[in-house]
Image (cartoon, rainbow, N blue to C red; front, side, top):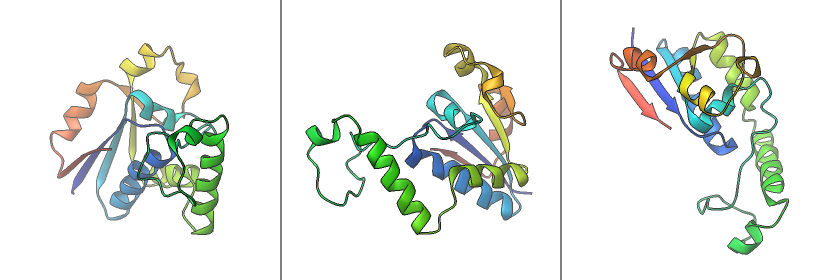
Length: 154
C-alpha cells in the first residue's frame, strides 16, 4: 500500500483546502494517509471551522473582482468580505466545504495528528478539537513520514 504524509501549517481558508483535498483524494486511491497539523494549521482540527477566514492582505495572487490597493485591503471588514466572496465562489463552482472535505478524510481513515507542542504553546484545550484525532509530536509523525511514497508540506 502506498503512503502519503502531509504537514499542514496554515489555518486560512485558502490554505485549508490543499491538505483535505490531497488527503481525501489519496485515501480514495488507496493510499494510507496521515496529516500532521502544526502551528496555525491546528485551527483546521477545531470542532467549529466557521472562524476560518481568508485574507486579501499580503496575498498578491488572490484574484479579486477589481484591483485593490494594499491600503484598501487593510480596511476593517475586508477579511470578512474576502472570506464571504471566496465561500460564495466555492459554493457556486460546486467545491465541497471545508467541513465536507474534512469529513471525507475522516470517513476514508485519513489519520489526523495534532501537534502536541503547538497545543501546549498556545494553551489550547483538547476539548476544542475533534474527538477522533491523535495528539503527538514531530517524532510521532516522522515515524510514519519516513516510510512514505509522498511527503508534502502545505
